[in-house]
Length: 341
Image (cartoon, rainbow, N blue to C red):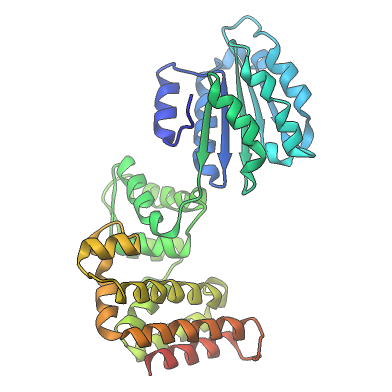
């Protein structure tokens, strides 16, 4: 079976009773991996049979032979048994240990459901295992870490699934300040949904009140002020950042500004600046998100956009103590002044 990319399809199949003998779940984003594992735990073995037919291992505490031996055994007074190896990346010499599963997954015990999770960046360690599973009756799921521009779509989709709406500004606030991993982002969303009683609309005020993010003084609003060249508002936001340094590290602010001006520079040199061309080049999900770039195209010339990138690189170096020992918020205010002038 080919690698699966849609966790919803995997979960739907599990709920429909289409359960495979092997699941290899790999990737940096653990949220979807945890959803699939939870569904298997719920559906494979009945609660009254779990004592004898549910075995959970952790990579840091086991070796491949132990897990394989358990998987080869038949269930006790039940149709199936569930064997889960979590955090297999933590096994000593993980690649060699994972290769020891290849023979088993090529001819698995059909009365056992074996689940192996591998989280982190070095998923190449599972290459041989993935190939073997893909050729047999198993499932390989790759849970990629979402990019920043994809987060708003995830937030809106999560709210839609829970039948509640959310303002675009509230989406931006959550994505900017919470961001990935999705488990943390959705955790805050779940809290907001519960506070709203599962109905109505999540507003920026709800986020500000219950998540602790200011709707008026955050990186998103600072970027808006920079784009519109509103220097007094920039100064007010930086003052707020200075008084709340824990929640407003300037390294994050610099990254937000750099990403914007890098994309603005790309937009300036596009042969066509219609919505479809801009959306494709800037990886935007909809025309609404292009507003800030259209404004920037008017307020910052190509030369000024390129100069802003140069100034941001200089700011990053100074912020790391290269050629400067200035306070990070003083450096940020100096940066904004230079970008605008």
